Image (cartoon, rainbow, N blue to C red; front, side):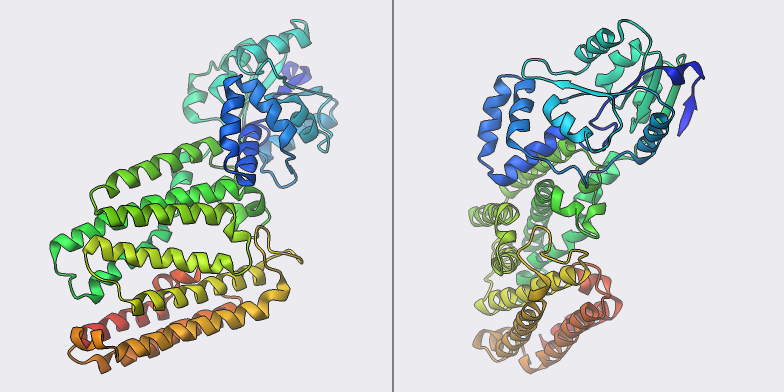
Length: 477
């Protein structure tokens, strides 16, 4: 905290903004996400409400959405300050552009504020409207105001004390420093948090697009390689758009998760509205770039996106069907790579992909259940601790099937045509079995802390085994 204040200002009534100031998130956008998760077609309904004004939209959202505030991220430094001020007897008023009905429900368990003032159906209590309301409430007497955005500048201009919370450095510089002021919870770089939320480390999964090109022995063809690389970029953009959308829809369950609660959106370090815009821009960029590819590739990436969205909205909460969906998303990457490179993905490859990634998806659920702090169901999923044994058995069986399919592939007719010595591929089956065994063993020991799909690129023994598999593949050609 930084401050430039006086003893006199500490006796002034303090008016506190909610969105971005007391809490790191935004009540209206939280409600929008809940309503969209309930039914994506609610977007049409909300658009109609918005035509009648933002205040009307907030009023309808407050009626339709019952928010759970207990896990919401606060600006902790500022909250501690408010608690201290409350103990000294200072008058605290929560005033926000959020709907007053939802505002009072939020403030009640805090027991910090003497009163709450929010928007109604006609007036969106923001900027000048908020300043005028405060002046009416104080009868023109001096007051302190805590805010976080440029919409609060007009209120700060009338305030005797300026309190900036979670405020950008550029806005802080623009404000006049002649008044007593305080700063709390300085904001980090939103670009960094957006990059983190896009999960670029997950882009390694899109390397699957290069598998059909490699197995067809066409990796040296510059034209096919370039098309595959363009397809890789398209899938990276779509994947990041889906990750952002998924995090927006899963805010409540992510905040209850032992590790996902630190994600930028769940933690409130990335504004919801920023993530919404970024998700749309990334998706549009992906489809614009995809038009450089074949029509079949565009259809596949569209199907991938639709299935991923359906997974986020519904399928992830359905027992086992969520695992089938995840495996299908990986198989679509393989087929997309084949279409981009204009080669054929054999049914052996697609069958191998489905079984392997079904097993790894089951492993991921086993890890989540093992690390979950919730005794009952896994938040946002259809699994309980009682399902651990069944999930483990199904996952290990699927992984074993993938190795078996690869062994059958060694003796397939098309393999004989592609490889001079197909029997030299046998070590790959052993190396793959070793990687999968290690993944399940790490999970059993509680040492697997990430997506098991990324184990091959992050775990040293698995990295060595993966590299050896490519060496074996080269010798078999």
